[in-house]
Image (tube, rainbow, N blue to C red; front, side):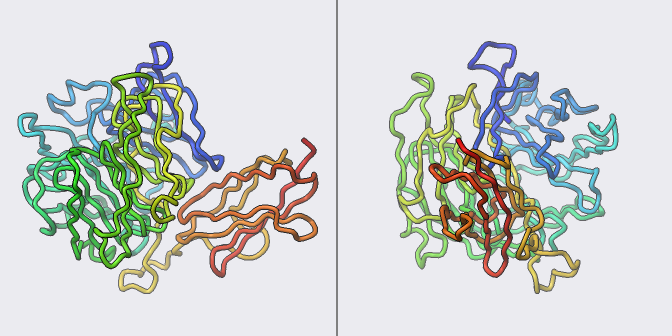
Length: 469
């Protein structure tokens, strides 16, 4: 969800970017709430919106302000930006474990404008049983941490037990990470860890790999760091600092679905790193330099800013300005230029102010067999031969263009579509952690087709009827 000033004419207004049909779909939305860089949202299991925030207020599913959902992050900076904060990863919505109607918002702002740092990490609690299931804020702006903090960069990863959450923020002018733990009992500060380089106030982005085993921190001035991470203990290890020889001072970072490849977007350039290489620094491939494109016109350059892995297995990169485009890495698990980086490849109906949401991997399960795997939870959705649970094809019948949705799997899979003679007429890789895939059977005869999905030893299938064009 992005866009601003819905009361103005196009290209002002709201833009939604949706992946429910297997490929990116953008649409214009007229609404009162504006979104800037500091944004996130929450949906139910079907993809229906529950609520969202621009880090100044919380909007419910109707787009109206949620009950008691105003006046987040009290500070002069927040007062100066009433339509949404301009902070990377300034807000995060982790669900409260074992309490399906309770959600937390962890958030912050700029409290010391002279030094561009935060002073507080706040907690706000939402109860969805209020206001006819539209929800209400029941506690707000509770101080979790009071310290000199780097603004934004609030991120989370699932605990190794598959239920709880680790949450992190960074202490400015140090190498200290503050660590919090979210359990069914609530949110608690769990300690801190000193590791890696000393980081001053910064405006970059942080990211866990989808499997939770790696963590990356990027700001153009102090460059890139990659850590390993123990989801059981909540501790970082093995820091690798990689200087990048450019003069860029902002940007973002995102992992590929497998977690092997890391993408750094650095204002004018995009780099790929292989985290499994003997030398991660030596593996760097400079996959893109800004091509001079403006959107819609100068001075609105389509640079490279914050990034996010999406449910279709692709990485999307915001442009750093309020433009009418997003960049996209189509095949992020492929090495080098085979990753198919497309500059300004997604056209948007309205100006979009770097509003990629701050999401952890909600689907990550337990580390099976670890000392922390004590809750008897499943690591991922189990699929069996035949009509697999949760596998859906739509529309059905179809003219040849259809979509498949399936349970999230932590490994890459394979899709094959066969005709009634058993001939494979379509095959494609299914990205790890993806949920949707679009299929096009151009030129195939009308009739019944069999869709077969495989992830290692697991398999599922369904059928599709193709009609005459």
